[in-house]
Amino acid sequence: MNDRLFDIPAHVEDSPSARRVPKTNPSTLGAIAEQEAILQLVKRGYPVAVPVVDDEGVDLIVNYRITVQVKSTNRTEKGGRYRVGLWSGRNDGKRVSGLRDHVDCLVVRAPVEDAWLVIPRAALEATNAYRVDALSFHVHPNTSGTPAGALASYRDRWDVFDFPDNFA
Image (cartoon, rainbow, N blue to C red; front, top):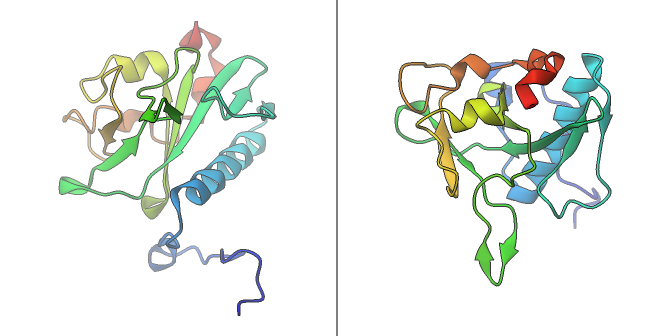
């Protein structure tokens, strides 16, 4: 029997081979991504609040007003792109698709590449990579010029939170 409460390594070396994501369930990966996003934001000086109940698709509130949904993905597909699931719970046994109307920003963690995409909702909706009613969409954090790579310019763009007009 395992003595450990959680089977998640406390420290991971910072090398490409060590960046492999431990196999775990999607809820655990999501919780890890949320905590890592909080760390990234706080290190950069942004105030962060965490809702007590996450039943409306909001994981974080940044700068006292910007609602954020955090997603994590390690699902790579053809060409190195990632599939990001957008469902957020179930309604009458069916998945609720797309971002909720009141989410201002989507933060996507691709741990295999140690990449973050910090995407204001308006930028996401302006691309061909996203449909409002989609259950998922594709991103490529390193390549622009394709629908999946259209959001590559938002890699590590934590500074989007400096401009409130991004979320008007």
